[in-house]
Length: 130
Ligand code: FES
Image (cartoon, rainbow, N blue to C red; front, side):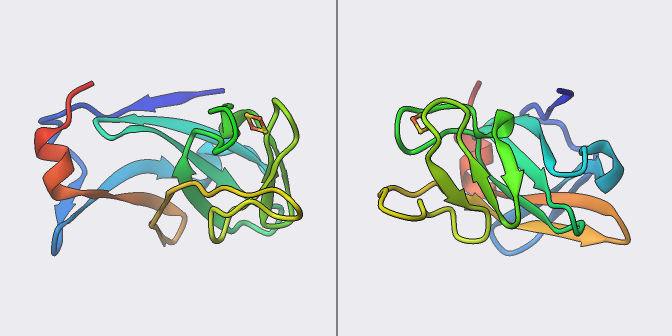
């Protein structure tokens, strides 16, 4: 799985908004269909998912159960199944589905004609270090 790294001070591809930086992460074609790629940011690893019908979602790459890498899970519909213990997480809400409980922080994705950007928090970008 390809991983993109965004570093502090990496100004290329940043577009400021109100409290948010939109960070370019490539195109939808960089993500396998029904798969994910991982983006390293100063705010931690973000998993970016592509569904079978080309919807794109992003969230922390950290299962709420025991921090499994959701980017390595199986995408089905608008959900991902964690590769460690099979918790199913909604890609739309970040919440565990079924009988499980837990929630992952979701990240806004902008898709402009297949060119993707994720929204990172301005303030956290300035203070975070990885
Ligand atoms: S770490 Fe994801 S289900 Fe256990």
